[in-house]
Length: 302
Image: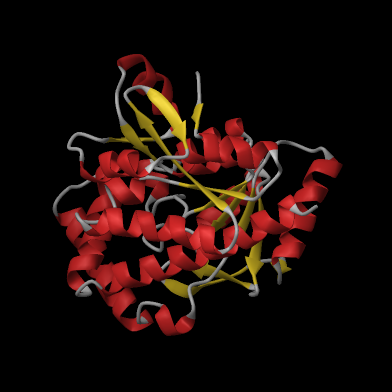
């Protein structure tokens, strides 16, 4: 698989300047037009303001791109028929000459292959509720168990089974640390109600752990830096609990299963919180992107 790495990203990697990988699913499938393109450009600008180079990742016409120019971002944001690609879909998309936005798993894989060590996203996928019945678990977890990358996120999506996801990450040997907190964030919420065993308090400390990962030379697994959305910007916890319960009931009533569950639940939350869940989501993403850029700078300065 031939990666197309933009000149700006390649020059930064070669010169050991900070680079931050960004996923494209939020652009193609997570936001309405034209807000999606505005957010994509805004997130890249946040990275630049911190002195790092953004590397938004997508597949265009069967070619995986690490680093997009504005015209390519516009394609991802505005073109109809853009697929949603996990890492398992990459060979299929390449062979078919298809275009697609990359999920966490595909973005992490392509970033690592290009030599980008730091990746910012909103929330990870994980173990779904009713897992014992559906066996539904995100491919993100398995991929992160065998990919050396640092992922800055606001925890896992709160529609998932958070304690089961944390247990699965432990089983898979994926390191998890709270950033400035001993509580695991809940995506829309600053606290999922579950603890984390390790806390990191600065970009330099995160970079130290990244160096230690390499020095220990263990399995090529990821480091998850769980960065909570600020309390002032989180979704109201009471509203979240009520609407999520309604969403789960509606999902069951309508018989939605498999890959349809997550988009249904997230869309239900947006509609029934009058957009407040989307506002909290974007606040979390902005904070994660900013922190990732600072971590990338600390890593590059090693």
